Length: 431
Image 1 (cartoon, rainbow, N blue to C red):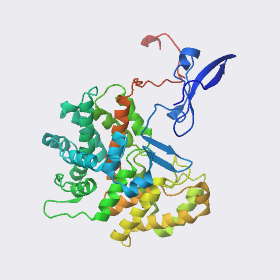
Image 2 (cartoon, rainbow, N blue to C red):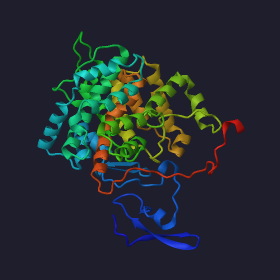
Image 3 (cartoon, rainbow, N blue to C red):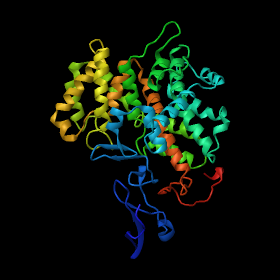
Image 4 (cartoon, helix red, strand yellow):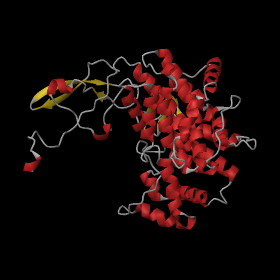
C-alpha cells in the first residue's frame, strides 16, 4: 500500500476531515475509515459490506469487469490447464508454486492424513439416515476439535500447520462418508496410492463387493472442479471464517462456520439450484417457454447458472469447466438422461440468444459443475459438500493469513439502529 500522503476529504457539518487513501497492487483505491468514528462520531452504512474492504490480503484477486481470477497472481485458466488441485493448495497456503521436492513432500503429508479418527464413525451414526450431507459435515468438522487437541492452539504456528494439512486431507473423507451414510452403504477408506480427486471418487462410488477403477477423464474433471472452487476472495463463507477466527476460535470451529455459511442457496447451493431449475424445465421442447419467462421482468422465474454477481463478463472458471463438461458428457453420454439433454440445449440457446449476449448472461461455473456432477452420478444434495471440499484450502489460507496479521482485531460490525429509544418498563397489570 502507499503511504498516507494521499488523502480524501470528508466534510461533515462544515468541518473537514482528512482520511488516508491507499492503492492496492490491483483493484480500486481504498479510503481508510478506521479513525472515522474517533474523528467524527460517525459510522459508515454499507449493508452486505459490498463497498467495504474488511482486510488486506495477498491471496486471491478478482476483476469482475475483465472476467479475471488470480491466485497469488496466477490466472485461474493457467492453473486449471497446467496444474492440479494439490499444487494449487500449496500455492494458496504458502504463496509460491512449489518445487518438485516441495510438492512431493506436501502431497505426501496430505495423503498420509486422509483417514479420520476411528471413533468419529460414531458421529455419523448419530444422524438420521435422511440427514442432509451438509448438516453432517458441519457437525463432524466442528467435532474434529474434540479429537485433535494437538492442533487447536491458534497461537502456535506448528499447530496451525498441522490443522491445515489435516483439514485439507480429511475433508474429502468426511464428505464421502456423509454421502455413503445417507445412501446406506458402508464407508470406504481412503487409499495412499491414488491421487486426491481419484481417492474422493473412489470413496464415494466404490463398494466392498467389487473393485472400482476411476476413469481418468472423471478424475481430471473432479480435480478441475476442486481447483476452480479453491478460493474466491472475500465471499460470504470466507468472511464468515475470518470473522469466526477473529475471536480466537479453534480452526475446526472456524471451518465448520464456513461450511454452514456455504450451505446457503445463494452461495454454495447455486449449482444445486441450477439442477433443480433444469428439472423444472423438464424437457427440451419446454426450453423456449422458459427462455421467455426468464426475459419477462414480471415473471418470478430466473435462469440459475447464468451470469454472476461479481463477474460482469464471462466467468473465467466456466470457460475451463465447459471443456471438462464436454469431455464427461461425451464419455457418459446424454442420450438417456433428459436432464442433461435440457442442459446442453439450454446452453446452446443462451449462448446464441441476443438477449443473453447483451445482458452477458453466460453460463457460469455453477452451471457446468452441476452438469458434470449430475453426469457422474452425484445427487444434488452432494453438490454443496463437494464445494466445501474444494473451498477448504481457501478458507484455511485466509484463516492463516488473518491469524498472522499484526493488525488483526476481533470483528465487530456496527449498525444503523432504527428501533425504539429508551422507555420505562410497564408492569404487566397496567398493559
